[in-house]
Length: 600
Image (cartoon, rainbow, N blue to C red; front, side, top):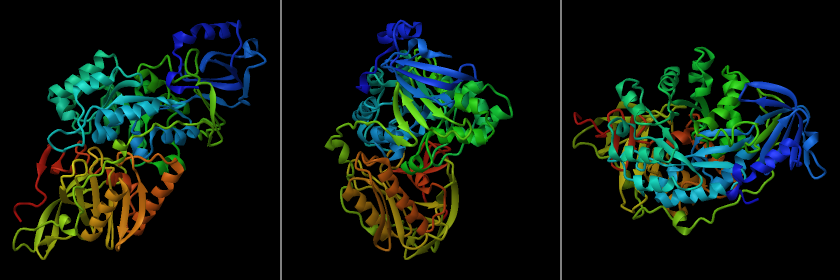
């Protein structure tokens, strides 16, 4: 099957009707299962699903009347038949995989639809990179819908990206076949202040009748939040507590609750449903960011649904939040999200609605996975050299590039320090007293150095700052070309020589993540496509990532999913303190600040 030209409903409606009426026979029948109906929130025992042309023709107690000698029979054996799971908001690049390899990794976990925002590659390669992601997505045997990135740069004036996205780019992309809306509108101050560029992007999306994604990463639920909602974003995944979830749905937004590799926001928000009794149809589950190790070892949307159930959600409600709620939000209720006539035949067979073992996965009427094994091919895009040669430093870096000079005569300084918060996207803006040795600011047991190295235009620029929370010891450094969202290079270390070694190594291999200790490379994850992704299989990338995590632990870091925290330290749209190629940014005020307190 050519997955890029999956037939639309009008093209096959006559056949579906004929099968449902018994005038024709089905291509496939799933027989004898318990039908989990997410429209009515019921479990109905003893039903068959008749499938034709990759879509559901009918769901009836006995489909023998539309079964012929050539009809494939799948025996459900009394198991639950649930809709394929939908991830409402996610970034494929965060898995360090291309769309094809990401699909191969999540298909066995029951994910059959993803709503992806490729704004990571947009920051590196612009509209051309988005088109590459979009085109590979359409080749896959599952549904990968693309949201056109909205904010590259995410905060204009506070960072410099490799490429920029314009309102004209957004308007052009709205005509592409796989685009379903606008990606998360991260520039929430811009929307709240009626920035013409942001409003033009939103307007182009709404004129196309598509969904505007939200991203409101501030705790202020007063006038600034009201202004942001008035600007048009229809959902938000940045809530971290019950009050955030409630505020969003009360204002007509969908509250997207995420469980990713580093984001554990479901438990603190789902009480809006389980305790406050709000209408669950306005809540949606998503992952946002999942790295390859999570996908291989823990799961994808099946993991999120199980977690929601563990947090007190009724299993049927949890399933609605990962299926029909998502489909409805994006205007695709007639295409995906339920096991009902006309929809794409995306079905999971499972023996337990709470533990949710994914035993058989059917996508578009084809068995694509069984007992954890992917059974289908996931075609690759032919990525050009322009996407594989994206790390440009200008010159080899030296230890001196990472020096922080202290004021003349100072024995210590007071510094603004980025404070990492475990399992959350926000950081803390800390003030710490730092020692000075031979005129240079040095790290401590609690605070080490961070640098952002410009890698798009070969300027040779290095911005140095300080970060707390990783717990690193010894002479080490870790560097990554995954540096949300500008995707320059972030280097964190306790030793300037190791920082230079790590940065130069990534320039040598074309991008990725590396960790050096005592002059030796301890781990390397090669990400040659845009410095963000590998087109190797997920298990291979996960093995490299596991080795990296082990090297981080051996270097003293015990944070959960510390790599994800590392990669987000340049995300200048999430409070409180971040680093960019232009300096240190206080995201509470959206102003650059000095690293060292002028009083010192």
